[in-house]
Length: 478
Ligand code: NAD
Image (tube, rainbow, N blue to C red; front, side):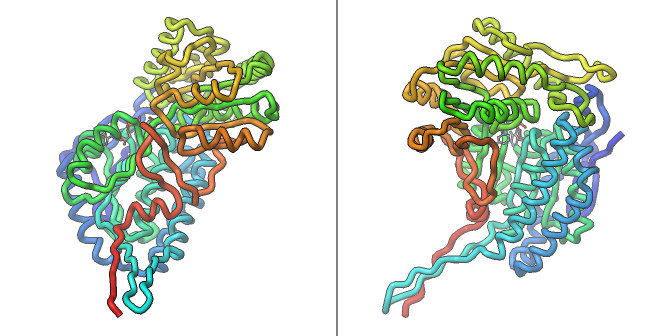
């Protein structure tokens, strides 16, 4: 049994009250370990430890911070196989995908450590009168709260800019996927991260995350997760005037015009629909296809999707692994039932799958739904699983209206060879990210985040570093 511990005040420890919760392996549907269920006592100790570390870490020169963060990145690289296996067992994702995500986790640490070396401040000169310069101060103690779908990838994406700009961090991974955050704690100790600079607390959302959000000495909350949780966090943090970055849900349109390179559009759409069992906030879950090519795309897409191998995440051939938890598995199947009631035709999938030797695991066949209107629940709500809807359209105006018809605005994908149309559509689509003839192509310098109910603020590059610092204008009279 895997026993996970907190990383608190520089050492690994159990929750102060010794409470634990079960940790499940979704590929087998069994408990395979325990995690501490921390509470306000652990949070208080973490805040105190972070406050004690801040006076030194906050003013440490960039090069020293860079060396430690870079060392953590090297250790992630060196332990990539172990981390990937732990991620795959904990989350249900195919091992090959987990290996790719570990590369990105190391990149996150390296990218922000390097960015801090180039993070300059502005000056504004009033000729003959004064010079203004901008100081950027670290905030102090900040909280990073992350979800279960891309565990270490998103965890490091938040922690790295916070540490690089001199903050001390209390980080809370999802209680559903705690394994790689625990291994990461060990790597931070090995890399010589000073005690208290980073504290990693495990436990449920309310017992750790909720306490962090409400804690008066935690200055900022960087949160990635569901829209409802984000709404609740905002209601607690806003009256305390905390800095808040919210990366929330998505219901992303994937639009294929008749002039697209159809081979590329179909191949990428298989990935953008079902990678990580569809449990990526950026997955294109509403596919709109121009009527002229609708039948052709439908036939080829269904054919490709039906071939996807569902099974043991640790098997190299597996394309679709296990659903992360039993409640999430039930929720996805519930949406499929609802789609049937709403009159959907199921073109492929639409059911749970039993995998030989892993009969108690939680598997769902990649599912394509057809015939649902824009106001159907399955076209409006985020399912966050291997379920997409397919809908024909006739004109640019019509598909634009369809694309913008949900409360979300995270990402969109457009497939067309027409340059004018691509730019015209991109500027009118209400989403923080638009991919044209590609999907999930990421440059870590770009602003990352959502419009509408998909979030507040942007991560990525200097955006994240600006978030984790307080600007101060100093005006000097000449
Ligand atoms: P969730 O909101 O249930 O949980 C996210 C994190 O918040 C977890 O660590 C959880 O323990 C914690 N939490 C729960 N209740 C809390 C509370 N009251 N106060 C503070 N923290 C609390 O989300 P999830 O189910 O883990 O993740 C799936 C969601 O995340 C999906 O909606 C997905 O779209 C979204 N997501 C968004 C992005 C993005 O970049 N926009 C990326 C990945 C996932």
